[in-house]
Image (cartoon, rainbow over all chains, first blue to last red; front, side, top):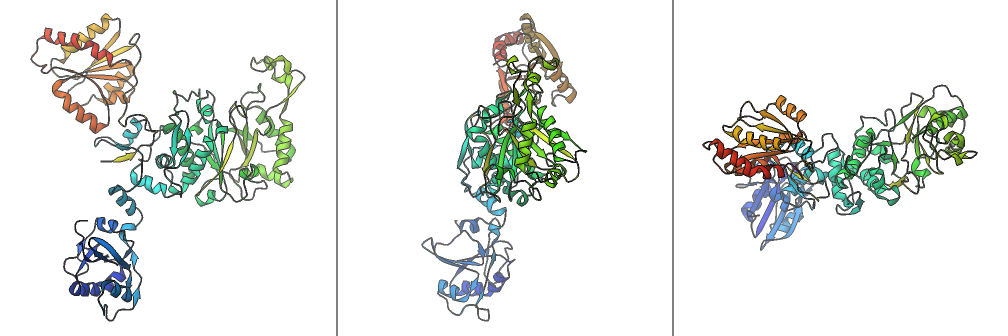
Length: 479
Length: 91
Length: 68
């Protein structure tokens, strides 16, 4: 701050501020009677009432003085600030400067305007320039002849699609989306067991294309998959199809514009797509979980780019998934489930809940392998038209679960290896027994989808579902 | 110059890593790309002989001019025909 | 070289010592770490025998960069 005087008065103003214009004659007075250095944030010729205002177009001085409002008047003594006031207030200005009779003809007071150095985006740029970001992650300098996208692809950061370059400014803005400390560690990401700090997650959220307001949902999803009972290492390393599927409940869905309706499991919604993607990038980049390395999936599934959607809660007769799983209504939450792809359930003729439940059960029994039970967990995504059938018949969620579990009992004979001419299957001892396709608690039901179309969906789980493998985890979204 | 924040666990260096190499050369095809500076071919011919002596398959390529990168069709051809490349001789 | 590595083909470059600084600068500006073997400058005025001898002397170093 070489241009700041050791002793004396300093004012910071901008032309584009009616109060600064109002005080221009007062600044002139002070310059004559007491000495004054004026810094101007926009037009270097303003104010013309003082000789040579210093232009601070780069806003360095404003930043270092931590100006928030213009005009601000500061008194310095021995190189230290001993007082300041902002806006126009005759009493305050006279007290600070020791000069009486200032601003003859002006009103007593007038509030100031927002300073340019704290406008959105500007503050982040200044923090980066002055190295005040508090960001701890290693800086990666991109060679001047490197294309940014190629630079990120070449370093292995990408899931195959372009990334948003995680500049310091973008990451700072992303961190504004949470109140949590950037250095808070949410857990260790497998397989590398590297620490997932809020900052590292924010970097990946930037790359995924998230807005800052999505960050709390991403943080909750990461917390959920790092819960031991989700068994993230196993879910990643399996040769099976699964990846984390994220279901969002509560007010956050509408606040950030998520899609719970038409094409909810498809493309086109920034929040759905980028939140799911951010989680996958965290696993890839922090955890070092990558295909053909620790990720041994034979086929995988397209959801491993990102699989996140909102439950369609409004107008549903069923409690939201998060409430079913123990959280209070009205609380924003995410549930993660080790799931694969999507199997369709077409039923355009069932008019009774019994018929529709049977229809869904037949499809549920076919997941994973028709010859294996219990096979895996499953998430049944009931479309609004199907949910209406249950609602009009007065079927609660509990009723539907009860019915589906009953319908998913399978005679052991059908499951024996060799039965139906299929070598896959279980031991001959299954004869005479009945086996349920699902473990108790292995089914989850949510409502989602567009209003037209009698097409529900089944997201099958991982074969090691349940206490010996992965179980779904729900986490509240914290700001 | 663009500065990005590292999204990884920071266990590896920040520059783009070299591709992993195979453990052995046996059974692989090696491409020799002559970047077309004069006398380079004599050097590369000898490398070719030594590789063939070891029973390895070798394919030879030459850039049309040393002043520009290899044209796209040549790059694609090389990538489709060999497992490894020796490129020379720059001076 | 960077192009072929981007296409999944591990590459080793052979250059004369004149090229060392240029190679470093290029690598820095591209953010790469190319595998390079340097032979003594000059090349243009060497006899065929001398060039073959240089190839023999550096053959092992070149092969070393082609394998793990």
